[in-house]
Image 1 (cartoon, rainbow, N blue to C red):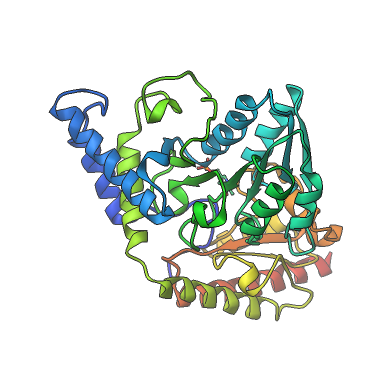
Image 2 (cartoon, rainbow, N blue to C red):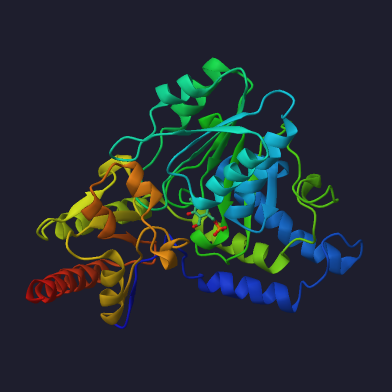
Length: 386
Ligand SMILES: Cc1ncc(COP(=O)(O)O)c(C=O)c1O
């Protein structure tokens, strides 16, 4: 086996159909989708097709999809766009301690501008209690933002119950969901969940980087972040990333053709990984097991072995995994998510994240398990000789 890529929560490999769609759009559909002539119409047709596919997958209408530059921008537009649009109704916002850094940074910006934010705690598996949401929402609250699947530990939040709990206190509160890690591994249906805004990203589902979308419930008013241009229903000005959206569309098409079997296959690969890695002495799974977790992310601690040292030892064995979240891994800061679980210091420093995708095979899991067992044993031997 030449290499085993198990860092799919950081980003996924583009499918061949995605590469082809991007290249075709760059070479041929180079018109501006806002132009009135045929070249403009060709580019516009690409947007229309991808918008329709995403709308079908989310079970919403095409007019409710806004294309963005990715999950980070979708989150910022949802959070700041709502806070600004409703600032006269209230200046209190609710989120959780385990959100992605793009969400937390939007809230920190708003705090600096005078908004107040409640950061909800989670239980030992990383789950938010809807009763805590109910208790946090007040007459001043305009927005509740909770992620669907955590990017570091894979825990799934009870979004439907959270949305209902928030509305019991304030029926017109806006509910935003960061579903960047959920799309592709579980159903994401805003209307069934009862939520108003949903963020998704192309590169987590084998599409290109730098493209994503925000579902905005019809009739909901949010404030655009950079001026009110004519594109994307006035919510996101700037010429659309047509090649990126073409690739996103190809990834969505592949997703639409999948059956439930693929998700079951992933879930059983995750279970196998967990069972076999917990055979290592002192190993622990950080987060939930079974239905409480997404089928593609698992986070482990191997006490005595530093996470970043293990990542490099595995790299030497051609296995690619991550410590905590990719966005913070260069700075080797202790993960805010693992901290929120209340893990002991030793577990915080010795954690790695293993994340699968539909391209991951059974043989790759077997190869990675053997490599991890070997790397942990040899690092522990080295340390005990010191
Ligand atoms: C949960 C979550 N939200 C948001 C993002 C940001 O998405 P993007 O990389 O498309 O900006 C990520 C990416 O790591 C993520 O995992």
